[in-house]
Image (cartoon, rainbow, N blue to C red; front, top):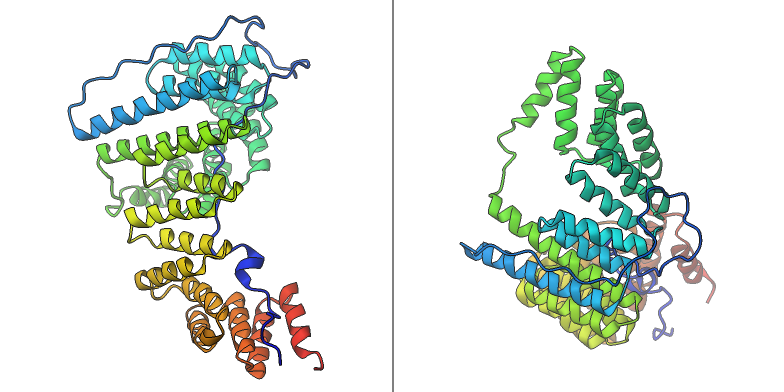
Length: 462
């Protein structure tokens, strides 16, 4: 019997790996050029004539009084350098302009940010993100009616109107336009029924309308999606109290005062948010550069970002994706290895290195990473399932692959693990046991076409 050909496809190759690499898509990544066609029903658009854009002066930074403040200043300065560089490189790109506006708004330069977004809309009045950002800016200036119109334009112009609808619903709620707010939140929830924030805001609108049963229903839906939603718990407490149900009001009041709900220090939270925002800026800038075809600048932006925020897995994934698209797998592996070096106790880091290395057939690196993962989490089945697949590629290690696959099944008796064990047994010519494991895989996933085809081949007359 020939054993040099796999009759069962290796799970990793067919399903893209047990640990998935997600491509981060920041909201302001579009480099869509100005649309010369008629404006699609937007109102209050800025003047269509515009002067040459001049990058505004950066806001001043206060002298740092601690290391955390010094780190914050460094991140902000680097964020401005990244985005200003992209704005210069991609002249009149509305996505780059919006990103610059966000930085100024975040730094307290609301009027400057407003002018940047107005310029972006003079470039392309159908650019939904600019309407959304401009709406947020004028809202900070107390211009609710203007913000409302800008948010309506954002919802009309954006391919995904979710953020525009949410912002519109909130500003309507703040103005007491409750029936209209209910309509906007319902439109949003038709598109995204698990948006907890929108569900809770809909509950607030119903509550202000005096429709307490509807409000309680919405807050309860939110808790079904996120059992720890503070906004939903608070909403239920106030809605039950308004409805006169003091027993339930007390129940949710107790949850709000639960002493196990810990609060971290403000400095820790501010630092974390700064790192997250810096990561967002670098990823958005990189996406804009990629869409403009400047791969070198895009990867350089992410590399610099990782120097200042080495724990940003989103930036790391994006950089790996760039190197992968270029066929530069060794460099991609080096990027993943750097995460393992800086965080040797991170199971996710070792698993990401293992999965990627398997995809590009760097099996020695993958095996070493999986052994590290097993040492960190010996009760986690995925590491054994992947390791068994590597061991199967070496004839001398196929009996060992059977034992490794059995460990995976013992830890997690799921269909994919039974399938891997069946494959390992097949390669040791133990066909009866292989058929038994494959039968179990099919019992768990009877409609899996790959399992069915493998079973048919195994059962066919020799």
